[in-house]
Length: 233
Ligand SMILES: Nc1ncnc2c1ncn2[C@@H]1O[C@H](COP(=O)(O)OP(=O)(O)O)[C@@H](O)[C@H]1O
Ligand SMILES: [Mg+2]
Image (tube, rainbow, N blue to C red; front, side, top):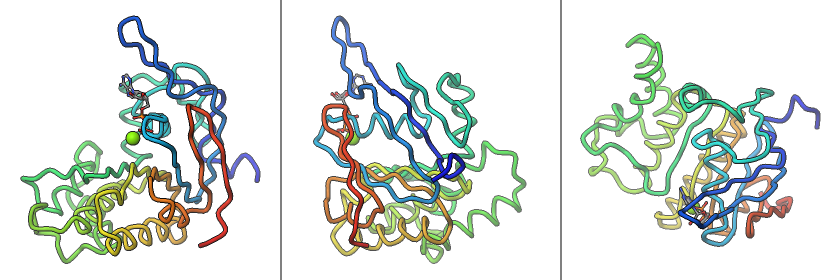
C-alpha cells in the first residue's frame, strides 16, 4: 500500500492522564496505520485504552506524545477550536447508547451536526434525507427516539454520523446494547458503508463475532497493539 492509501497514521502515540499525583498511561508509544476504506475492529479488556484511542483518532482529544496524521495533515497540535472544525467535516461518531436528543425527531437529530456548517436549508434537507435512506430508517423520520427500538435508534445515530459525509466513522461498542438480530443488521450496515461508500470504519467491540465482520482486528492490551487479519467475511 502507498502513502496515499493511508487515512490515519499514528507514530509513537502516547496518552497520559494526570489525576493528582497519579499518572495513568492508557496508550504507550503506539504505531498504527489505518487505510482508506477499511473496516477495523478494536478489541481488548475493559480499561485497556480502546475509547482513549478512538477519541484520539476522532480528534476529540489530543495525544500527549507522538504524531497523528489524518489524510496527510498533521493534526497532533491542533487547538480545541481547530479540532472542532476538523471533526465537523471529517468524523462521524457512533455510541453504544445512541446519544440521540430525546426532544428532537429522528430527522432533527440527523440534521443537528449540519447546523454548525454553512449549508442552506435546502442542502440540509437533501443531506438528511439521503443519510436516513442510507441507514434504512427514512420511514421513521418523524418519530421521536422513545418511539423507536434500540436497533432503529442506532440507525438514526448512524445517519447522523453519515450526514456530513465524513471519510471516517468511529463506533464505540455500537452493538453492545442490542439483541443479536438487530446487532447483525447494524454490522451489515457498517460493512456496507466501507464497501459501497468507501468510508473507513473503526469499531470498538467486546464481541468476537462482531469483530469477524471487519477486515482486520486489533487487540489492545495494556496500551500495546497486536493485530490479526480476518479471514471470515
Ligand atoms: N479523562 C480521563 N481522566 C483520567 N483517566 C482516564 C480518563 N479517561 C480514561 N481514563 C483511564 O484510562 C484507562 C483507559 O480507559 P478507556 O480508554 O476508557 O478504556 P476502554 O475503553 O478500553 O475500557 C482507564 O484506566 C481509565 O480509567
Ligand atoms: Mg471504552
